[in-house]
Image (cartoon, rainbow, N blue to C red; front, side, top):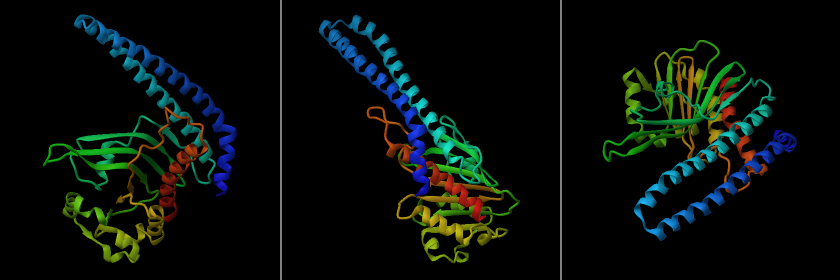
Amino acid sequence: MKRLEEFRLYYNHTLHPELMRMERRRLRLLRLLFFSGIVLLGLLIFALYLNILAITLVLMLPVGFYIGYLGYRIRVFIQTFKPNIVNLILDFIGDTPNYGMIRYDEKKSIDKAVFKRSGIFSSPMQYYIGEDHFQGKIGEMDFEFSELRVREVSQVSNKLQEIFEGVFIHAQFNEEVEGRMIVWPRKERQYLTRAIKDFTWTRGNNVDHEILNLNFREKFIVYATVDTHVVGILTEPMQEEILDFLGDSDRNFYLSFIDREIFCAISEHKDLLEPHLFQSNLSFDLIREFYIDISRKLGVVRNFDQNL
């Protein structure tokens, strides 16, 4: 609560002036879109009135280029807004004890090879796209995370079907750890047959009996190799932190430990950190939502650092 009060002061003194500058850019862009719409509508009416194919075809080329230009201007606004505001939020978060410098790149994402190495999902992943990449250090733990949308071609309908959509976190232990373990949501088990089979093929076994927290065991299935110290890695405090993080939400939470590496996938079916175009972004509630969302993801990494 105290941290939110401090963020409100930071918003008033630092974020609000930048938001005002971006708001003026947004309004200029809206005026451009409005007048462009009137001109384009007039050209369309003119072409329909003349009903001459040659003139219509001649008009199509510059109109197409101009619509592309408007799309470019919209992308520039969004791509300028996000890093400007997010980096200011990260400056505030950076004052938190044990938090190192955190870098943000709205165009970058976690590499596909890293995602596949986690073993959480087993799929060709023909469609893999991501954005909003964060990278830094909390305590002694290096980390990165980004939004991902992962799809595969269905063998039944030949259409793309969802594998994962949300935030994917990759972090590393600060000391040597051996073994492999994956934690899957129990309710998603029917969709994870291939991933579970692949893990058991590499000498992984179900170790639910080693999980003493009944609430955690009710929500998750746990597989590990014989050389893995399950309760030493997936500690009881960590189990409680995961349950608290999820609360009553219906989000899926996946966790994988491969020697020194930690992989965590959190489902999220909404675009994060997206500014408004057709309404004002001069809202503390909107920026607070950005701040809370980033803080929660960083909190997952902090809990790894504290409980491992």
